Image (tube, rainbow, N blue to C red; front, side):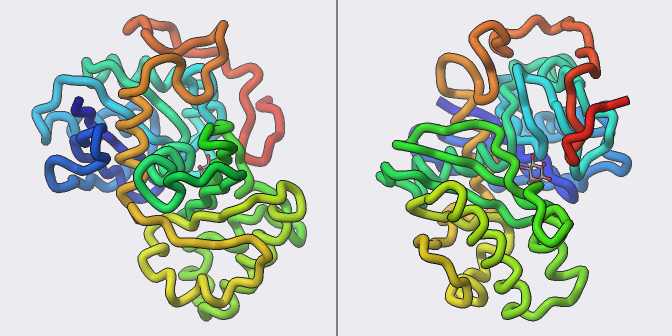
Length: 280
Ligand code: BGC
């Protein structure tokens, strides 16, 4: 089976058709710059352009940098606030004319790494952490995903962890690999003291340079680089779209698949901003 995998990020939207049996990209990946502001209209237009680029009419899996519950985007840390509470699955399905499965970007990357990459055959408690514009996290136990963990927003020294230790912050502050690794270690130590994982998989674009910082990390937990590097989100989104049953983040009463194409936008009530404060 082939599914178009799309990874929506703070700076770029990347996609490619994926052979879900092997986890390989069937065509070279295509990148579109994330529109600014990254509103639902502008981003869904970009996803439709992505589908048109591949002349795609089949199912689409979309990885998105937010908490996804029942197909809706509940937070918006690095995209426009108008995504909060939006019925993103319907918006994307309606705009592309294809059935869309939506899930958190780190969860997507983790699904791909657990199936085809660094987490293959790992049965213990595994954290996939993506270091990019923000810090994404995905938790697996015995190979099963616990969706929507948001450890990048854990507070360290009165700041969200992703504002101290994401790859973006390393560049923005011009941190040396040593200084950045020290910040990252502090974050990982916090996580390991709370969850006692067996493995950390480090993903995101910077994972290509893993030899520069992974040896500098001080943790009691094993740390390995992602093997699919930046393709993990694309592959994982496609895998999620191809797997039967509820999408990650769905509850039995609140399944996002199959979805009515004409669903009304969601209420903004009960949605949370990235800093977890209720929406006024
Ligand atoms: C978002 C997460 C996302 C991560 C990586 C965070 O700011 O809250 O949902 O997984 O960035 O993109």
